Length: 223
Image 1 (cartoon, rainbow, N blue to C red):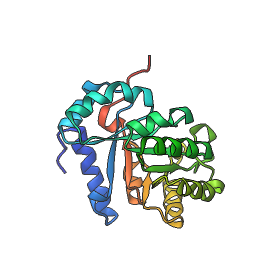
Image 2: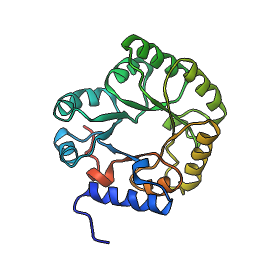
Image 3: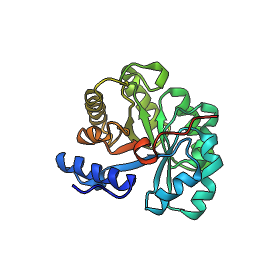
Image 4: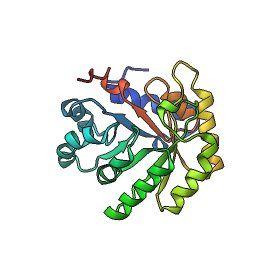
C-alpha cells in the first residue's frame, strides 16, 4: 500500500483498514484529533484538510485558542476528553459539543445544573475505570449502573462509555470489556483507543478514537 501524504491521511487509511477487517463501515468511527497543548498554527493544517472533530483536556486552554479557530471553521465539533472539575461544568457546557469524562455523581449534578441554566444539552460519555486506576478518573464498574440512572434522570444525553486502559498492558481485553458494558447498558457509543492502539479499539467496537501523537507528533513540553 502506498504511503499516505499526510499524517491525517495515514490515520484515516488505518481506520478504514481496521473497519474493513471488522466488517464495519469507516463512517461508523469518528476520529477525534487530540489537539491538547498544541497551538493554533499546528491545528490549522488539519482543519484545512477537512478534520472537524478535536479533543482538548482542559477547559481554560480550549477557551484560549478555539473561539478564533471556530470563527474560521464553524463546523468544528469540540470534545472535552480530560477530567472535568465540577466548578468548570458551566464553562465546559458552554464551549464543548461532547464531554467524554463524566465519572461521578457530583459531576452529574453540576453538568445538569449547567445544561439547565444554559439551555444546552451536551452529549456525555461516561468514563469507566476499567483498569482500577483511580488516578485516571473514571466510574468504578460496580457503580456504573447507578451513575447511568442518575444521568438519565437528570436529562443528560448519554453518548456512550469511555475508557483509558492501563499503560504497558495489552489493551484488547479492556476494549472488549467496555464494549460489553456498553451493550449491557443499551449504549451505542464507545470512546476508546489512542495513537498506539486505535486500530485494535476499532476492531473491538470503538465509535470514537482519540488520536494525538499520530497526527501532531510528540506534544510540546508544558511550561
